[in-house]
Each structure stands twice: as C-alpha cells, then as structure tokens.
Length: 361
Image (cartoon, rainbow, N blue to C red; front, side, top):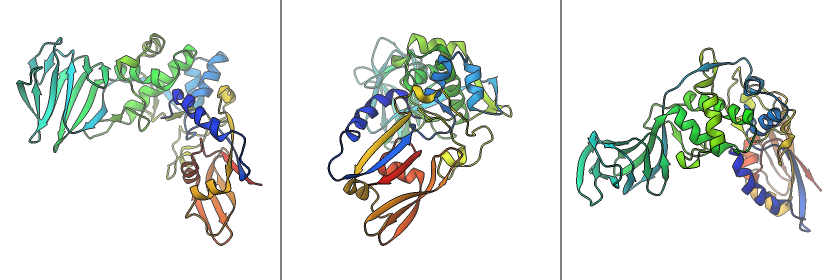
C-alpha cells in the first residue's frame, strides 16, 4: 500500500522535478493523485473526517455494497530473510522450552534445521524446520514485536516471521500508513480497512504478508502510537465484508477527486462489485491532489526507449477508466509507435498516478 508518510520524501524528489525547467525541457505532464486509485483514498478519508463523517460513513462511501462485520485471526508477517542467524530477547518460551526473557538467544540454520542457541552459543534445542519463540520479542536489528518470532529454514537460508493476532498486527500498520495526528474518524477508517485487507489476503505459504508496500507497511510495537492504538481499540475486530467474507480493501494516498474501478486501476485487474469508482470531494487536502512535471526531450525519450522509433512526437491517451486515469495510451514516434498501459507509463516515467496528460511544446 501507499503509506501517507512517504509523501514527504516523495515531495522532496518532486521539488527537483518541479524546479524551473532547463532550456531543453519541452514536455509538460499534468496529473492528479498518488497511487493506484482503487478503494479508499487516505486523504479523501481525512477530508471526510474533517467534514464530520464517522468511520462507518467513510468506509461505506468507498466500498459500495459492503457491510461491517466482525472477524479476527492470526497473521504472519515476513520481517526478513537470508543466511546467518537472528538474535532476540524478551521471550519466555523457545521451541517448546522455557527460556529467560532477560537473556539474549538466537536462531540459526544448520543442515536445513533451525537451532536455538543461548547467549553463550550453547545449543538449547533442535527446533526442526521451524523454530518459534514467544511472546513479545525484541529482535536484534529489527525492533520490538507483539506475538512470536518464527524462524523457518528454507534450504540454507532463514525466513524471519512475526506471528501475531490480527488486532496486534493492525496496531503496527495504522501508525505507518497515516499520520497519528489525523482526525479520529480517519484513523478508525484506516484501522478497519487495514484489518480487512490483512485478513482477506492471507496466504497458504509460510507467511501471509510482507512488512512493506507489497502488502501493508508494518513497523511492529516500536512504531505504535496512542492515537492509532485507540483507533484500533475503537473498531476492535471490525472488518469490511462482502457476502459475509472480509473484503480486499485496497487503499492508497490521493485520488485527485475520483477513485477508479478495480478492472481499470490495476493492469490485468478484474471487476470487483465493491471496488467501483466514486467521487472523492474532499481529497484536495492532499499536497499532490494535482501536480505537474516538466521533462526534457532527452529524459522522456530515455524513459520510453523501445516504445517508439525515431523521435518522440506525442503520447496519446486512447482509453481511460471510469475516472480519467489512463488504461491505454499510444507512444507515437516519427517512425513507429506502440500502445502501452497506463501502468507502464507510470512506471517508466515515475509518475505519481496514471491520471496524467502529456503536452509537447
């Protein structure tokens, strides 16, 4: 997911892009929003909260045909992977044995099995393919986490996983996805959609989620705040449901004024009944509600190399979604052209969203 807190560094990068153009800068790209555009707009939720809406009203606006229900479970978050060992403290049990939470222990992989060792390197237990220490652990180099740390052997490597209840997981997500200073209703809406997304997207493999934007940004206990934890407690176990099951509640930073259907917001996406385009009237609180980038011929041609022949003449939008976001566009060169997706343009040009229009001076 697109964490709001990463807008700040993004804007620092944007400052360079928006600086006075060099003499050869002849392309102007005007756009709106930041993120894929599907589901809940975080700045839109902020705006709704500022205008007196509660979290239930905010959620029902962005996720049509849904209801609020109750659900909970265990969540497994991948914190890291690689060779070597992982050290931890604070646990009272490890691989089925009582251990001293005041002392430091480590998991290491040897011959495809996880070994639990004490502070002096002595072997405490052979754990098999997976070692587990619980509960409430401080992992060296990573931080403090609720629940358990699980070390899983994968050949000669190790996966380091935090296994914990979904409510504890959401506490470690909300504070990293939106500022804790936001209105309570916006934080509560974020808590519900983070919980719903976490439960709806569980996997059958060794872990359910990454700790970064490939899933949701999760920082563990060290990242929690009082305000965001209050939002989690206020909405305890509440999830967005569709036909009785947790809905996949995508969210993103800024809509630019209108969200997008799932089949248009993601390349190769499918139509999902509750992920439909809606107007987003209060999203203009975002610093990237609208944006402009000015690029030189050399830079844009370099970024789009292989998509045209000759000199780049124009980028024509050929299909849009329910919002003005680009579904397909034609990259037109003097001797050859290619039709590409909006996501391709966004990735190649490092745009904030696919809601963009191109003008060549």
